[in-house]
Length: 129
Length: 382
Image (cartoon, rainbow over all chains, first blue to last red; front, side, top):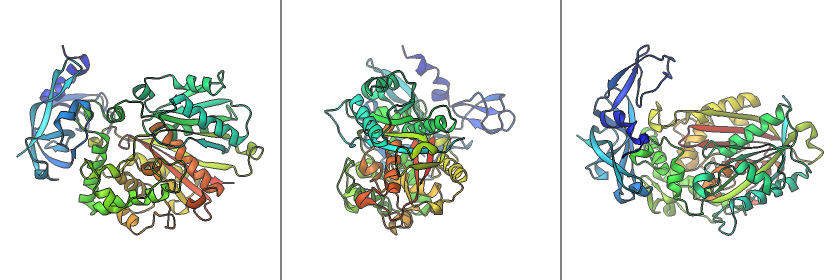
C-alpha cells in the first residue's frame, strides 16, 4: 500500500488540483492554507490547465538512486496557461529538442518507485506539442 | 545591543577525511579556535549542520560536540538551514553576545559527507521534496536551470561560468586548507563530465568533510584576548520560496538581495566599501548571481565582470580568495563559518599569498538550498 505521504498528494499529482485565493485571485500549486500575496484564507478549488510553456530546463546526467535508471532525462520549469509554475520532467523527447519557450502539455505518467518493494508512484510529466 | 567581535578561529583541512569522524573534525576545529582566542571558558555554543542524520545517522550533535570538546554542561544548540547552517549559527551566536546573555560563545559548523551516504539524495532534502525532488530534480539540476535562464536572458556565456571555477581554483591553489589545491583551465571545466546541462562536474562544488569554528565575545573585552579583533558590523538573514519554480524570476536570488540590503543598512556602508568577499559558489552560476544580487555589479553583468578579472585577487572586488566552495570544498554545515574564517584572516593580514592589500572591511554570504535562505555578515578589523 502506498504511504500516506504519497497518497495525500494524489489530488495534485494526478489531477493538477490547485487553489485560488477568493480575495486576490492568486493560484497556488500545491494548495496553501494562507495566501502569501494578501493573507487571505478563503480559497476555491481549481484544476490547472494542462497546457504550458518551458521557462527553463536542464538535462539530468547524475541522478539520485530512485532515478538512476532514467538518465539522461530532461527536467524543466513549466508555466501553465494559468501562469502557475511547476517542476516536471519533459518526456518522450530528445534532450536537444527542448528549448526555452517551447509549448508543452502535462500528461499522467509513472514518476518513480517507492521504497524497497517498488510501489509505483505516478504524477505529471510534460511532453512537447 | 553590545558590539561583538571574533577573537579566534580554527578549521580542519577540507576534503575526504576518511580517518576522522564527525566528532574528531569538530573537536579539532573547536580546539584550534579556543587556542587561537586564548579563552579558558566557553559560556555557550552553536553548531551548524545540515543533515548529520542523513550523512552519518547521528543527530543530537550539539550535545555530542559539547561532550567531546570537554565542555559538556554548557547550553549547546544545533542550527539547520541547509547549506546556510553555519552562517545562521553565527547569527545566533551574535544575537546571544550582543544581547548580553553570554560573553564567550563558540560558533561552529560541521559536515561529514564521505561516510557512504548518497550525497545527491541527502543534499536534495534542502529542496521541496514533494514538488521538486519527487519529479527528479537534483541540486546541480536546479542551479543548471538558473544558469540556462541567466544565459538566455543576459547572454552570460559558457566560458564566463567556467572562469568562476578557474579563478576560484587559482585562489584555492594557495590555501593549505583547500580540498583541491590545484589550478584548472577553461577547457578543463567545459570538457569535464556533464552533470546537469549546462553545468559540468567542474562547475560544481565537491562533496567534502570539514569543520570550522570561531569564538565570539563583546568587543569591549576583545583586546584582552587578541590584538586584532574583528568586529561584526552586520549579521542579517532572509528567506524566499523554497521551490525555485515558485519564484517570479529564477535568475534573482531574492533572499541574497534582502539579506545583503539589510546587512549594508545595519553596517551603514554600501557594496562599494567592501574590500574582499566570500560568496556562496556552490555552483559557478551561484557566484555570478550572488555578486549581482549583493550589488557588487548590475543584474546580468556578473559574467562579464568575472571575465574582465574584476573578481580576481587584484580585481575591483576580490571574491572567494579562499578558493570558494568550488576549490576549498563544501562540507555544507561548515561552509558558512569557513567563509568567515577566510575574511578574518584577510582582515588580520594573515592570508599569505591570497592576501588582498589593505583589506579592512569584508563580507560573507552563505546560502541554503537553491537560495531559499541566505545569511550575510559584514566585518571590520578593529
